[in-house]
Image 1: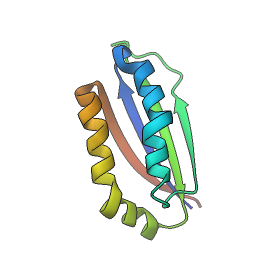
Image 2 (image 1 turned 90 degrees about the horizontal axis):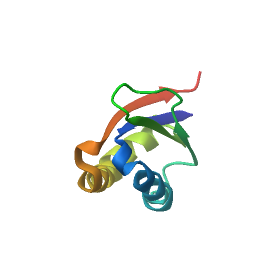
Image 3 (image 1 turned 135 degrees about the vertical axis):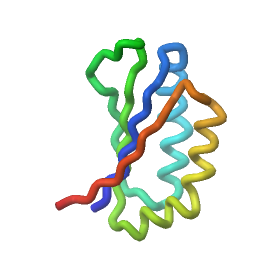
Image 4 (image 1 turned 60 degrees about the vertical axis):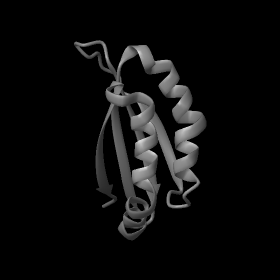
Length: 100
């Protein structure tokens, strides 16, 4: 199992819009690709000095080949939509993890 983890630093002025948009638009679009079987959406429980909040979205897929298919066919367009909507008010850091 491959876990695709995206941690996003969000400024307070867009936080509620970000949550709503992720739940109603972005996450469903990612899942509609057929690459991922499940997802989780978390808020990190720590305070940032600048008042920003961190969210974590985790997507689960069966293989690294499926993940590479997502990167090749879908990731660019979906990332661009988020970037266009939030610019520098939502900054993402991505990691891939493998179940041992």
